[in-house]
Amino acid sequence: MEKTTVETMRFLALMVALFLAAPAAQSWSKEGHIMTCRIAQSLLDEGPAEVVRNLLPDYAEGDLSSLCVWPDQIRHWYKYRWTSPLHFIDTPDKACNFDYSRDCHDPKGTEDMCVAGAVSNFTTQLLHYHHGTSDRRYNLTEALLFLAHFMGDIHQPMHVGFTSDEGGNTIQVRWFRHKSNLHHVWDREIILTALADYYEKDTELFLKDLQNNLTQGVWSDDISSWGECEDLSSCPTKYATESINLACKWGYNGVTQGETLADEYFDSRMPIVMKRIAQGGVRLALILNQVFGDQKHHHIPPPT
Ligand SMILES: *[C@@H]1O[C@H](CO)[C@@H](O)[C@H](O)[C@H]1NC(C)=O
Ligand SMILES: *[C@@H]1O[C@H](CO)[C@@H](O)[C@H](O)[C@H]1NC(C)=O
Ligand SMILES: *[C@@H]1O[C@H](CO)[C@@H](O)[C@H](O)[C@H]1NC(C)=O
Ligand SMILES: [Zn+2]
Image 1 (cartoon, rainbow, N blue to C red):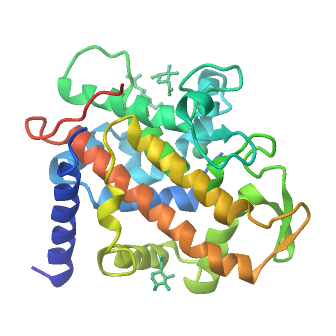
Image 2: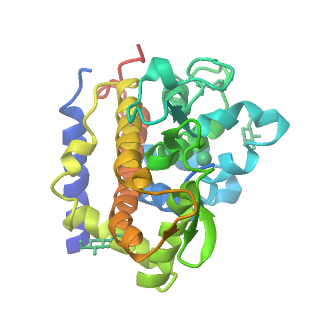
């Protein structure tokens, strides 16, 4: 076997071991979602990879990442208007923490209607795949696309932001020379600037570098902790809590209305964006491997 294959397998074995060891228990831009989904799909075990291919419509040609932005495209259609609050979480201004029962609801107050609730919801739905019920209450193709997308969103720090500024959307800034807003800087500007400055605008090169860092680079040491969480309800809470903490420490910190953000902001925030994309991908793979894996050996405790 090639060296890289061995390393990938070692990495996979490590991830599986780590996950089993803890049993008790608007969005990234197009580019961000695509990378999250590409990373996830590359880390799937054989069985789960096949289930994913089966659930994807033919025109996706087996490529999950080609449909990972679908939930952003349909969120304003009448039929899917209910999905609109599922892309983010509004937390109280300056609180810098996430409290599921306080914060996970839509503007009307309907419980669970936020990105953390959505991750649990669609994970639970996908568990029906193996139960083989002919009960077709759920469209599992859609559940897969929603889960893959929302795992990206929940890792974008500014998707768990403050209520009054709509996660930074109302904070107008300049990104180098053009107009933008703080939310968009995190959704897209940082990624596009990184692509232009370091990767010849080639997403493939970007992805290769990211995957390298996963297997043998800067993150290989702390990857072990990425899979640690108790169950279907505490995992999304952990991801959302990380996001609001990052939003406070790196997103909002020191940024004022009308300010110009440039090199200094970019250089210090880029590594965080990369890491969040990678974490979203690794964790999506963990979830899909669990949900679609051999049910005899895996057990996901139901949400409480
Ligand atoms: C869960 O998904 C169903 C549709 O399959 C939807 O009606 C419900 O609102 C969703 N809830 C959350 C919290 O995502
Ligand atoms: C499930 O959803 C997909 C995407 O919206 C759609 O193309 C497909 O027809 C749906 N399947 C069923 C059985 O409704
Ligand atoms: C990978 O790690 C190197 C070294 O720390 C860093 O310069 C680079 O930006 C990282 N790339 C990605 C995509 O994370
Ligand atoms: Zn989104």
